[in-house]
Image (tube, rainbow, N blue to C red; front, top):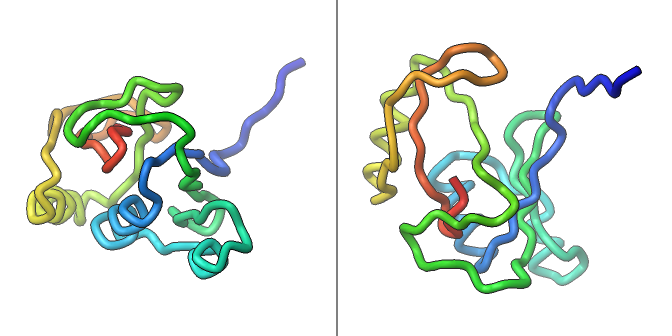
Length: 129
């Protein structure tokens, strides 16, 4: 017998500056913030950003010092993958460049949950890829 995982519910990222991370995930990547006002009011310990109706990223306050910008942080997370449509892919790369987000690798063909796809790799403000 085995556990049957059906989908990703959430990812928790340890971040050094929650406001900087909220800006990156909402303004640059276009995700919507959740529990932001409650976080600012001090009634919840961290906010989230929503990927789709069933998947979020929690932005948790880091309890350790993270490296400076431009260096991949080698903590518990190797990387995570967000999906954009083929029609939006070029625009996504343009948006990263406009926001001075360096591409670490790609576009390259990689294997993922939906089969082969074209990927680009970049870091968030805390060095998460």
